[in-house]
Length: 558
Image (cartoon, rainbow, N blue to C red):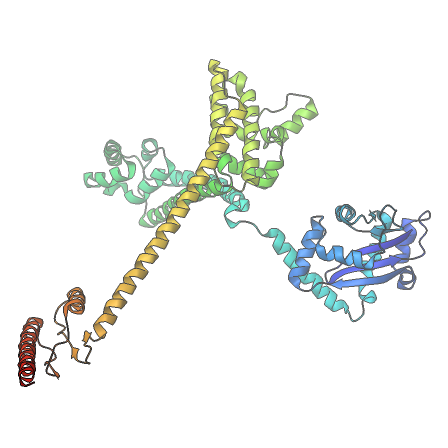
């Protein structure tokens, strides 16, 4: 049986034919040794066809298809054109060797070409890869290296591409930094307390919070300068006027030693650094909350932003957390205790990082293991929804949280919880309703914007029409006379007068002479036209009377 080899390179697809190979005596070691020698290998393997890629984008698409186990149309046409045709109902007298078994199965399903992928084929393809530039004419090794480098960069960029708003690496870095800041702020605050307590030891018992202690140490400076005038300022910092008065009274009877101005300056600077770190820690926590609501909203609403971020960072990524079963997620963070228990054959731990959740703290001692197992189950569901769902919603997390609450009530009071199927149906319906409402709101906004644009266009057209009407002459009579109205009034009045003038005005004439004059008011014009019409009527009546008399005289003469 003939053997063909399909080799995918950075420059294109190539098809090779392997001659004189005995299937029974196929020895991988012998092939591996003969591959290195081009003279021996060139006699066995020969090039049949080569299909270069049209562009770098085409090479990237073909590479992505091969990595996903898909056969493109270009590859199918290339194989059908260059491989022997298989008649229907008969077995093929050849086979195609491929490097990827998934691609081979896809080729066999679509084209019925038998494919194989084993160690023997892989060694032959390794030899083809080693001597590929010798098989293709006019192909330099440097060109092949450039093509491989460019395709490698583009393939890596395409694989790394993701949604910027759903980068779980930012959450991992933020939670690590948050833990580091907590340790540093705690140690620095203790150093401020110890340093300033040499000067004002009574303040340590009055103020317990480290952040407030640092702010008061910076504002008080020297205890001997404290008076009752400083009480409002201290009350603003502490939030309690009684404590401010207590601080002032304690400063008057303090047993601490006096410090030099240089020492006080150093204490103040260090206290300011602690204050800045504390404020940055608050901003970082707000950033972590917003990122968790973008990346894993369901997990955050179920178990909290900090605990959810710890689970993601411990697993390595959100996808790794989604792949974990609930039993693994339950003891995530307690690996040392687990392996110690397995080694000593003791009791395995019941919970890991999820112990910091409020649900396990609220459960009774005998039910902590049960609620931890149930909570891990719901966390695995929430993480999978967040990882693989395209819709960013927290409804599922809220419903899962309600289920955990109901389970706590069931353990404490015996109230039967709802079924998981009913809860998930309600969550799916609410998500569908929310998406439909968002779509409707988007359509309404689009319609409103279209209407506004139409109104603006109509207003512009009206303004342009009025300005054009002002520029045109007001009236042109049939005889060619032009009557122009003075432009003293507003646009609307001018437009209204124009319409009335077109309807009522008639061009007046008397005995073939035009009436005067352009620019005269309308009322005078109308009066003149009526008088002229009356005169015309009198003249016409007189001429008709003289004609009748002449006719009578002629009739009498006859």
